[in-house]
Image (cartoon, rainbow, N blue to C red; front, side):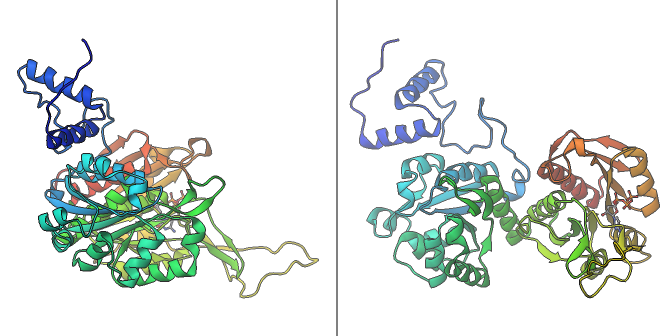
Length: 478
Ligand code: CTP
């Protein structure tokens, strides 16, 4: 067919067409062709209106990672997304979609600096036209107004939260739309900082952060990694859109008391333990804490009140979770007992089986008589202690079995020996790359049988386990 020229369109119609085309990732001409094709087929071109809610993934786009965001509990939740001026702003466009995948409606504010990185047109195409940029724009001020923007939402997410935006928030500034709205709101605020590692570590930024946390602002990230600037690395990368969306949904659920695990208390152990030899040396293992932390995060995202008892790890504390940091097995047991009662306890920590008898208070010096003989004593078994409680036992006690051989028989043996309800068995032989890696292949071992779960990310294992926990606590047959 010849190329297409359409004349006589009003400015408003052209604007709508541009938004619609951008939303569908097409040129305006392709969009018009598509409309005509739909109309010719009798559908009036409405088959793929971009401004509809994105509840059904479109062909060609991979299925969104819908858990834990696709719960009906998030229906009608509203997020006001403030996009700050940093290179990470491009990820905020994906964040709009991630939030929408969670059935959250999104309005956006772009700061002046943000518009150097993403355009209001792009954000508007994704946010169904709900984009605001200017405090003194008569149209948007009379249409909605910054006070209504600040109040007509359930949560404000600031992503990326630049050093400058954080400073303005901490100082109570209100000289542009974003800062005025952030000051005028009575709604919870979640920030996803993103900046150069040096800027992040500066005392001024850390002072502002401390003040914001003290003011009740929630934080997701920043993560460690490569920066956009060549050769720069460290803590300062904005959290990934799925992490920010999960944190937002978790906050929305917690605020609204909704979610699969609303009203339930879950205790999770994670990470290794460190057993001292002397003040500078210890016995440890290779656990990264990724699986346990992911379970705590998934349970919180499902609305549970979560206490995470963690050994020393190098990963951030999960959002919306109370994290208690411990070093040794005995401290872990004490912290878990203090966190009781709970509806469910998940023991994902790799607890050291032994500790050094009579660890030295002073650094052990080398002597001519050779290496010191360490004598080991058995640590308390945290899981077995809780699972075998006569009173106050959680309704559901879940252990992990990290094995390098005879996976299922060893896991079944642990289920009986420790008296837990389920065991999540994983093969931690070095060739599997589970220890420290992001993928896990587990079997769920229960009294009624063994389920082999497919290899999947530790986050997905966590969400699947949380869904099973919710079903079990709700009394559904397992
Ligand atoms: N566990 C615990 N306290 C311990 C040892 C283990 O709570 N002192 C828990 C772990 O968190 C896990 C389960 O028990 O949920 C099994 O841990 P694992 O290390 O696989 O088993 P062990 O009991 O240590 O047995 P073995 O080392 O002989 O395999």
